[in-house]
Length: 80
Image 1 (tube, rainbow, N blue to C red):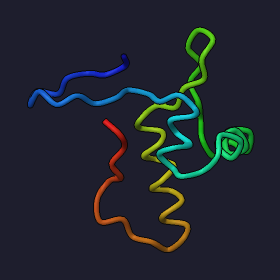
Image 2: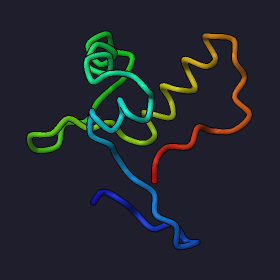
Image 3: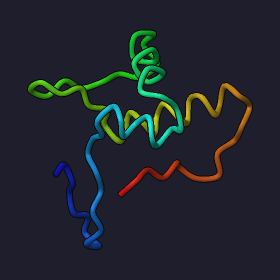
Image 4: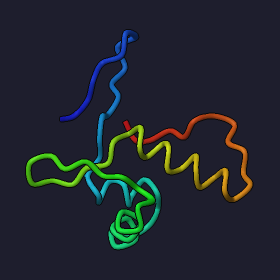
């Protein structure tokens, strides 16, 4: 779908649909929509779909971890 191959051959998703973002974060679809409305998550609009880029999802998680006082040991991994 929206994957690219890295030089090592592994696939990496470029973006996720809102239901996928909710699943990755372990929250409801409504919670993701509220986060977008607050400006916490910046979505992409492609055709008739609202998507969240992998980079934006990683930024959001890192930002929330830093605000909570957590120090991430590595960048968060998202679904392949």
